[in-house]
Image (cartoon, rainbow, N blue to C red; front, side, top):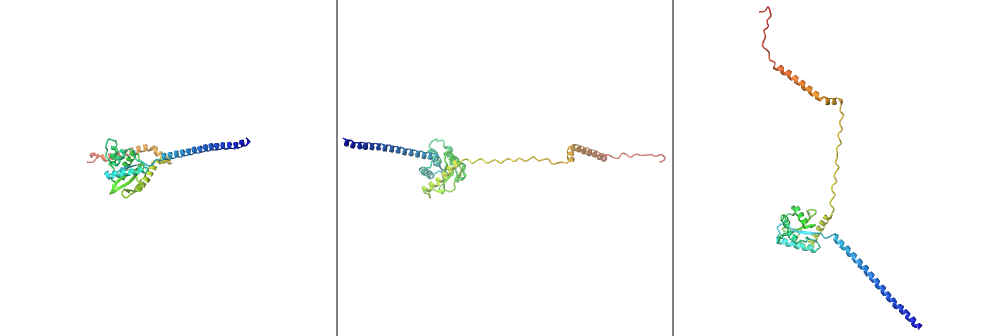
Length: 267
C-alpha cells in the first residue's frame, strides 16, 4: 500500500506539472503575440501619418499651340506615365481634356480655361501669366508643357515662381525613365517652393529728420536796417519824386516875352 502511494504520488505531481507548464507556456505565447500586434499597429500608424504629411507633387499637362491629334495623344500618354509613377494629376477629366485642347462635348464651365490655353503662343516664355493662371485653376505644383519645335518638346513650368525650369526634353528621343526623372525632379522642387514661408517684409529705413538750422548771429546794424527798411524805402521814393519834379520843371519853363526898360535921360 505504501509502495502504491509512493508510486502514485510523483506521477500525480508530474502529471500536474506538465499541465501547469503548458498553461504557463500558452499564456506567455499569447502575451507575446499581443505585444507583436501592438508593435505592428504602431508602425502602420506612423507610416500613414508620414504619407499624409507629404503627398506626392501634383502636375498638369498642357498643350501649347495648335492641339493636333499627335500632341493631344502625347499629352495623354505622358499623363498616364506620371500617374502610374505616383505623381498626382487633376481629378476632373474634363479639366484635363481642356488643358490638352480637346473640344468640349457638353457645357462644362471651362470655356475660360480653353480661351487661356488657345492664347498660348509658340514661345512659352511670353505667356508666363497665362501659364500661372492655368496652374492655379488646376491646383498643380508644376505644369508639363507639350509643344512643337519641329519635334515634340517637353518643358516644366513652376507655378509658384511663374518661371520655366532650364532645359527641355524631346519626346521622341527620350525613354520613359528619362521623362519621369525630368518631370519628378522639377515637380518636387516646385512643391517645395509652395511650402516655403513667405519672405519677411523689408525693414523700413528710419526717416532722417534734418536738424533745424540755427539762426546766424547778426550785427546790431543789420537788425536796425531790418526794422527801418520801410522808412528808408519811403524816403528814397519821396526824394526821387521831388528830384523828378524839379528836373521836369526846368525842362518845361519857356523864356517869357522880351521886356523894354526905359531909363530917364536916354533916348
